[in-house]
Image 1 (spheres, helix red, strand yellow):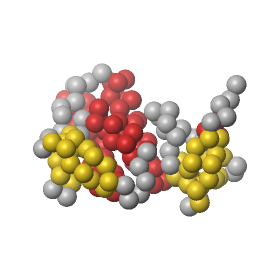
Image 2: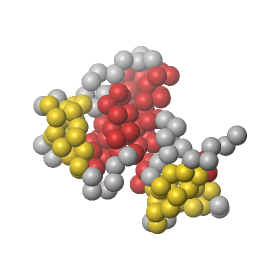
Image 3: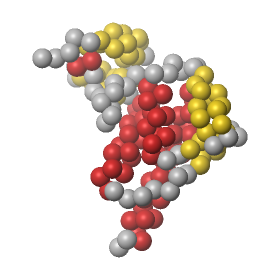
Length: 142
């Protein structure tokens, strides 16, 4: 039986209530926030792709069973932990944030308050750096 739960999402720039079962989900199983209506299907909008990529990194890490060193990503003078655990936490927090929300985030220097845009930027950098480390480790294991 399909769930009758609805989510408030933005579809082609307009906020709407849509049945959860109709929405394309991110790898974590959570719905995204921004969608495009394509051929009658609710597809994740490109703006949400950063979170999708981060969640896929987390999933890949689990499948590869390789140890990733903990990274620090600095954005606008704020240091963020950028290991796979914190990336999934960032993705979860971003999923519930409104565009201008201030988000409390724990980093190496303690608790800081950041905007959603800064957190997205940090998440993007963390994803790129984690991918580079995996590639280097893969090349070393050949």
